Amino acid sequence: MMEWLLAGLGLVILLLAGDALVKGAVNLALRVGIPALIVSLTIVAFGTSAPELLIAISAVSEGKPGLALGNVVGSNTANILLVLGIPALLAVMHTSQCNTRKSYIFMIVATLLFIGLAFTGTFTAVSGLILLGALALVLADAFRDAGAHRKAGAAAALLADPEEEVEGADPDMPWWKIGVFLGLGLIGLPLGADILVENASIIARDFGVSDTVIGLTLVALGTSLPELATTVMAALRRQADVALGNVIGSNMFNLLAIIGIASLVGPIPVDPEFLRFDLWVMLGASLLLVPFVFLARDITRIWGIFLTALYLGYVVIILI
Image 1 (cartoon, rainbow, N blue to C red):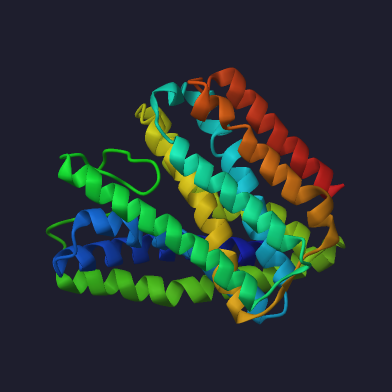
Image 2 (image 1 turned 60 degrees about the vertical axis):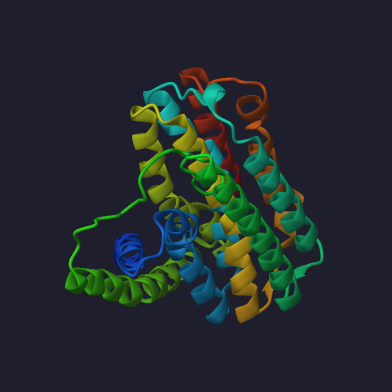
């Protein structure tokens, strides 16, 4: 029981520290004169995925690479099936009005690249550089699109173009408060990651399952909570573009940045079970977005039930 409590504590610390880091970094950037548009394209996107990144780095450095890989693959699957499925149960998401085709194509290409590199057997430093190079191309394209939108007088956000204010921005936040947020984030992230990884591994041993399975389920579900909260609020506010863009952007960053950086820390062997099952589930879940992206379909409650049921079925299969 103590391991479960400590793992939960580590997760809570991670989520709170990630939120604090985003708030501090966003407001520091705005106070020193970095445009809000650039902040939304970089700091917010990177900061909200900081928990997954720190878990991956901690897991690899502690010799538990399966947990790192499981977290990314499991998070991407959960982001589509659960993070879009549960909000759709609460309110219909009018994705038929969204234009996320370009970013979705980028996500599919990133997924195929990731799977291709996985079939080499190990994510090495070379694999990491390839993934980070792909991320650089995506960000460069996003900056170019953002510049075009800005000239046209439109607000642009990373990959989904939702018209919204930068998350966590407070023009009146004092310098001392910015420092506190940054300090809490920089201290809390590695602390929470270390506590969560260590106790998740103990839980895995106690239940006779691998670190990979714990990464695919417990850790992946926990680190998807921020995306779930964001998407639920977006659905209730009828901001389908924010919800869909949040999932697409998060998945792309998970594949390209998190494993890209973690593989520079140390090699990440790929469990054969990933090649047989989990990677294809992740790809299949990604392809389920085609009707909403290309065929102007809304994510209705029926779709919400279907997506959520698929995720629950997937978890049952990998736990059996």
